[in-house]
Length: 448
Image (cartoon, rainbow, N blue to C red; front, side, top):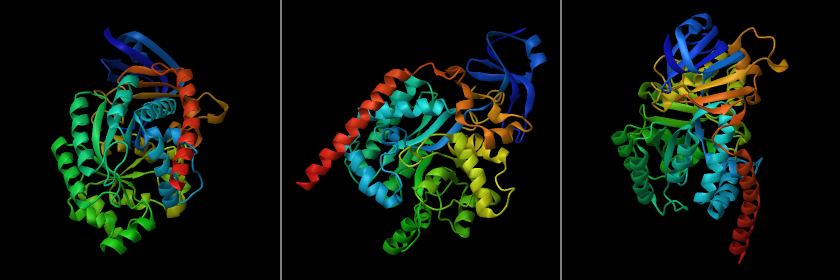
């Protein structure tokens, strides 16, 4: 018999690749953090001698989900300024709150809260954009999750850096420190075309090419953004990015609610990716990403939650359902974004956008054992005809029972194994008072 570290028996295994495939009564064998094989349960019992065995006969095993756009530490601003349009929400509430509160301590507690929430919702990898990426990397390393950490770039000063050159200099330092960590990769993350000028964008692209990493940027998020760009610069933001040489297979266009047909064709031709954040876009009334047209054109579309200040959760199961339903409603086609495609958008498409689809995003031999188990033996998920459809249309994040990242059991029967939730909840409660006090003090100072 073959010795392995872990053998997980399950009622169903959804590998995502091959597409729209379900294996009934199968087991996943794991050795040294990687998937050794996926075989029928009877065969596994005679072939493998595991150190640890998990028997989950009522569960579905699937790849860990990839949350391809987050602002993790903003979990501490969940519900802070709701029901406002994007420009007012951002400029009059979020940016002032960040100026008053963001610090390494804010990043530590906010990021840990986000990671705890994501693990409990079946997310094994996230792609972030926020301040103090060095501090975020420390939290990611301690919690054991997989992450792409955005090295943010802006024209204006924040608590992290004074100007675009300093953002880029600090990006180099953070990248060099953590580049050998197998669970951490980086992306250059210019905030948006309207907050980053041409020269920093060109310099950021040079680092993207040098390091072979993604470029993560908000693009065409609202009609107002596009109209202002045309008014002030004489062209649409995506056209400007293309002229600067940024539109290629490294580019992650986040939101992309305002796309014309020629822009969709450009993204497809250049191999660029779109990150769809349906619930954030709906909440901020930003517009609708033309997912059906993008997919038909051959554009890789991934899913993200955005930050909890604009969503207000990090629930990728919810994003899948919303993405599938929204695309059907917008396109007038009930076959648009079928369940298996929504699942792929939340897993393998996200990994592909981040350039790590050879590592994660599907359950395949040789890939990292980034695995989620969902208990489907509940009233809300019965009867079971099609496990993929059931996950997308009927399953909520409380059904996630277990999560493994690179073979490590980070969520065990709903309990986090590396994060003390009681200590974390105490810190988060304290932050609510700190944020209110800091914002009030800043407002009083401004009035004076």
